[in-house]
Image 1 (cartoon, rainbow, N blue to C red):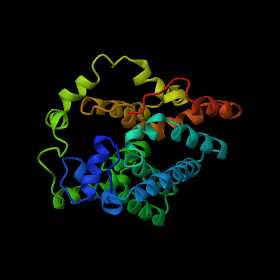
Image 2: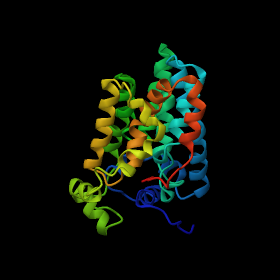
Image 3: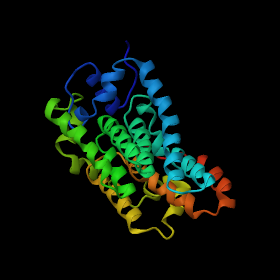
Image 4: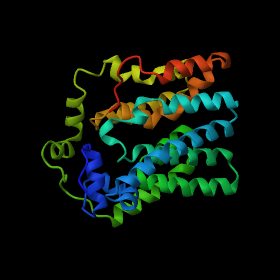
Length: 277
């Protein structure tokens, strides 16, 4: 197969799909490279289905939590329309963020249903999500304020024990520097942009309404989401996959029902080319 022009993360997943060792933490994200390998069609299928699963999971979670169907629907659209959920073009379709978030949302819905069978199913789904991206159980636990999702951290722990990582980044060059100096690289990438509203705030769109009267749990998950920027060079993608579900749910609950359709219409269009990385 002729390699497509892909981003660095996607390139690592393609290498992992060939059985090549990749650097931390990419070696923990073994499931999709194993399933999809070098086949573009498989990656496109997973990416496309992930939107359906994410929409189902978000609506189900909010409806199970007691939200009206209109509020649940609005929260779903607010989340999926975030530019970081779509991600940069070089990550489409070879990525783990959207598939992991989609399964995380389904797991969150099952935990919210709360029956013994649903809880067991939630753990199983979250184990799969954690095998796609190791941080999924952490964001689910913080969003639900429940320890149940953390059981799924067994998946990356087992992967770390049995899957060998590469001591050097397979892409070399500047990427090796980023791997060796994550904090220094992150600070350099965000230099002079910490107060750039178009990067740090505007991409949230109407989800910013969730900050009105926000409780401490939402503030905490936002604080941890933004703390990632101290060790990672990406921005919007990380923020939205981490705190997006909580922010979308809070915003949909705050906006009066009669204003939800207008809020969604304002949110889904791009008034300015957004940051997506």
